[in-house]
Every structure is written in structure tokens, then in C-alpha cells.
Amino acid sequence: MAGGGPPFSLGVETHEGLAALTRAIRAEEDGKQLRKELARDMREALKPGAAAAKSAVMAVSSAGLPTAPALRSSVAKKIRPEVKLGGRWSGARVKAFKTKNIRGFPNAPKRLNRAGGWRHPVYGNREIWVQQHGKTGWFDEAFQGREGVYKQAVEAAMENMARRIADRAG
Image 1 (spheres, rainbow, N blue to C red):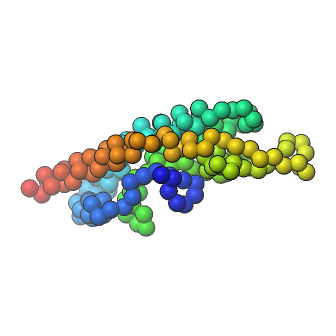
Image 2 (cartoon, rainbow, N blue to C red):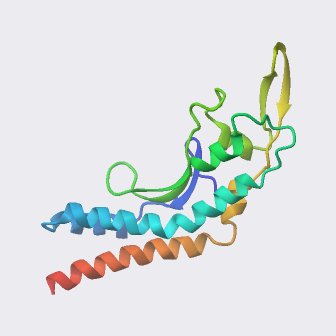
Image 3 (tube, rainbow, N blue to C red):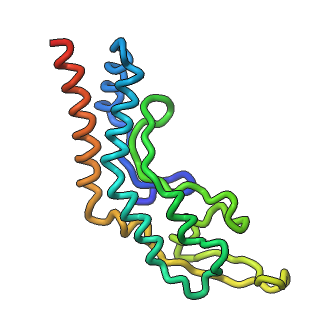
């Protein structure tokens, strides 16, 4: 379920219903407020998935992981639902964003999830490098079997907004 594009994400991709809903919202006189409400409702629908992914990364064993600054909690803070309406990409997803200022390791979410792990120099000795592994699939496993639940919740938020707009016109 890890989608393309760094770092990685799980989400409901663009489909015609969302594009049509976005066009209808733009046509309304308070369209900006309606877009904000739709985006908020879609993010709320994905919050349980983000919480599950955060729990999964915190459950990764810390044996062998350096302790300061805290890598797992830094990665957990960067996991959140994202909604974009219009533009090149429209949809809702849970995304693990890069960890820019954590030990020069911006791709920590992706590398912790990867089977190959990552290489880094040993602390205090720049000539010796080691291979380190996280927990393969922690991000994907957090959503396994629940993708449909999150997709239905996002679609329900879209349906509610479409119903609100239709009720105004009718």
C-alpha cells in the first residue's frame, strides 16, 4: 500500500467524484469555507489510520537504534493525514513526512520500513560503516485489512458535503 513518491503514503487517490465535488464547491458563494470543511472532515476520517501508524512505529524495537534524539518519536510526529482538493493531485492520504533535522536522516520513515534498512558510519569513527534495520512493513501493517474502512469514511465525508450542496440548490 506504500504509494510512489517519497517518503510514502496510503490514501484515497483522485477519482471523478472528488473532482466534481470540488468544482461544485467552487461554484458556491462560500466555496472557500466549504472546501475547508470538506478537507477537515476528510482528515478526521483518516486520523485513526494515522494513530495506528504512529503506534506501529513506536512499537519498533529500539535495540540497536541510537537513542538521542529519539528516532521513533520523531518519525511518529511526522505521520499525519493529508488532503488536497484540486491541482495536480487530489485526494486524501496518511503520509509519513521526512524528518529533516533528525541526525541528518531525512528519510527515516522510509528507511525504517525498508527490508534493506540503511547504512551509516559508526559514531566517533567515520571509516567504519554498519547496516541497520528497522521493522519491515510497520507502516503498511498499520493499515492492513482496514483500507476499506478509511476509504468509506473519506467517501462518507464527500457524500455529506455533496448532500449539503444539493440541499442548498433544491
